[in-house]
Length: 389
Length: 209
Image (tube, rainbow over all chains, first blue to last red; front, side, top):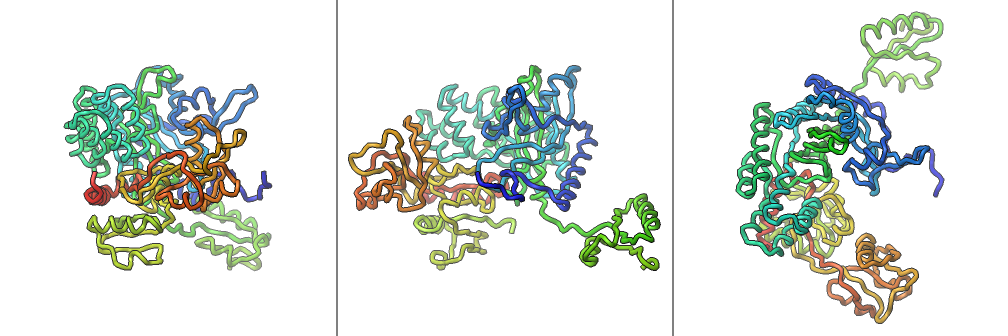
């Protein structure tokens, strides 16, 4: 191993410098306020969890988990996402009354990176989990809250694409049964390999109608009309039920008045294997990766509770990238004082702090370059020598 | 800028075939398009921007979203495993990945060595055959490796087989057929859906099923 330089950080770890911190804080506050207004309660969970429980239940790939050992030799993981830890707490404590529960969080999560840069290994997610309510209203509220939060944060152009895990599952069941061919197709969808999917479908011994139906799946994305097209493709009851759910969800979304941000996409499949109903991703035009995602999941069974929930998580780093870098103006005031005016300076600072003005007290003998220093503030007061200048 | 579609094109061998395909699909590309040395070419009348990249890097640009779509060889997609949609087989630049070596030779039993530009593909292939091999990554002139004793086998692209022949090498196994594919960034696929659907439909028409 080569010797590390003093400035080096582990792969994928990033510093947040004051300017970015400030922006991140503003965005986080705006979103958190919205969530609180909607009645979601914030919670925190530990950074470290057991590999056997949270690590295994989480759908994040094993290779992406940071692992370490505790003194007893148990494997620990740095939490790779927040949904699983929250499912753990909820199933063991918060769902005892069997009522709907609305939780929110903003926390750093950790995912080891194998590849080159451009992907942080530690990043902040802010999100909600709406637990133990299996209504379409719950799904709708989650999506409406997501949209409202992003708008409050200051993002204007974005799109939420909604799919349903049940649809492709049932379509494959209807046409292919439970054999390996369905698994093969699912793998192609997951890998986003539509060429392989199409070749596979063509190679199957199926009626041309069924082939067309399987191929149609790849084109089912767009507005409300897609739901109609999907109904033509699916025949079995569970599949139709998935469509009916989406139809109802669309009505809920329209009643919230946020339909301009919503589209449907039946080709969305997730590596998050615990999803059991709708699932969605959020896109902003100028960022190459989704800025958030969510869906309905059955993860609570893994912790012994028979209930489902819907949640979403927004990646703060991606969201900030989507919002672009507005120039942050120099703000705050600076009082430069010499020893003989110390008390006077402190009194003035206290007054300004009470007024809510960000004010820095600086002993003038501690500054080498006065011009460079005062440039960082919107205003400066000198309390030095023979009096105020 | 919002409506401009950025296309990452592979420089070199595939470029001409790809450009021809786009012209057949009805895109009006300027005549100087083909021999320009610029890395970024804007075609305002078609609302397109082309970036010219190393073939091996096309999927990387698309994954990060700095290009909305790209034309990349299947070999690159297999090697790089980037998170992009592979929407269409363009059926151009046909070739295949193969295992080759000196005639009538066996792999070293203790430490079988394979030289290649495609370490991931090579490793996965030999693992599937139940063999653990040592991979030596090279960046070009792969045929040299067995000739001078660097490796027992190579994994490389074969199009006509002439290079192998002229260097006295023979093909042992064929791994997978390779053609160029249209790849799309997952976010662009949703946000610029109309433009991308149009591009796919037009190319689909030209390529056939």
